Image (cartoon, helix red, strand yellow):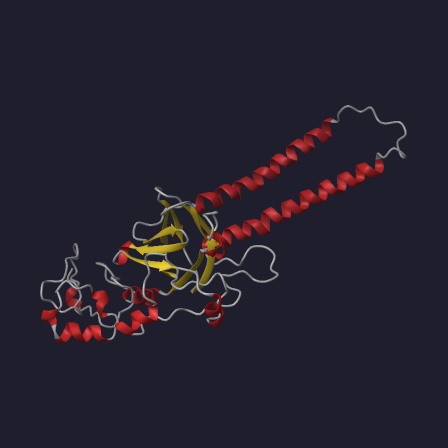
Amino acid sequence: MGVAFLPQTVLAAIAPAQPDVIENAPAAVPAAAPVAEAAPAGSYTPMAPTAGKGMPVDGAIGFQDQYSPIGEYGLWMHNAILMPVIVMVSLIVLFLMLWVMVKYRRAANPTPSKTAHNTVVEVIWTLLPVLILLGIAVPSIDLLAKQYETAPEDALTVKVTGYQWYWGYTYPDYGDFEVISNMMDEDEAIANGEPPQLAVDNRLVVPVGEPIRIQTIGADVIHSFAVPSLWFKLDAVPGRLNEKMLIVEEPGVYYGQCMELCGARHGYMPIAVEALPRAQFEQWVLTQPGGTLGDEPSDVTEIPGIQQPESAIPGAAGARNPAPEGAAATAAPTV
């Protein structure tokens, strides 16, 4: 496939010796070394999926349970508006067809009626569909508008690149590292308790409960990034950067697939999104090659190995500056 990353377990095993090297031999390490090198060992363990959550269920009919605000809205509209209207219209049409077939059959009406029109009937069958369409249009337009709301300026950005035939996830806010995701072998997926042909070696990891700016692009042909349980689908087109906001409401693992015919191995491009609390997400970032928490301090949790003294954040906060030359790697950058 070309580009590949070491497995997470290998990366975690490499991490323990790094903090001691930085503290005991500062001259051997550049002062501007990224704080990600101080990540503690074992700071990230892949989450085990929950059976029936974020994945297809054998024998199920209808949509998967939804775990995003827009997904809950879309599922409500389908169940509370569209399905009742569809059932009602189908039953009315069926009743009218049976009634006409029985009442106006040749045996019951040897002399056919010569009625040309009926004003009342024509008004009803014109106004009723109009009212039905208006009733559907209002929530439909609202749903479409909500699906394309712009993510907040401070939202986490993830660039999703579709390759033939695997996915790449780049985190420009956290060191611009890229995670390459390939389908996991069937035997390994079953051993891990994951659905075969949906499990991957490296997941798209995001913080739970936060707006995420997903940007998609194709490296070769058109792909489509889709996760049904999150009500998310966005095409990845070569030369075009598409963007959409995603919010995952609950921690968990959510599976999807490429939904655009992209070549011979189109069916082997699964997607696994792992939503973690912010503290665990930051720990995962620090296990990635080149991963860093960036210039902004985390106000959610303290990461082991990274200290933030109160004196480092004065009241009159301005633009953040990099740590002074020669400062210990475990000290927080000044504000």
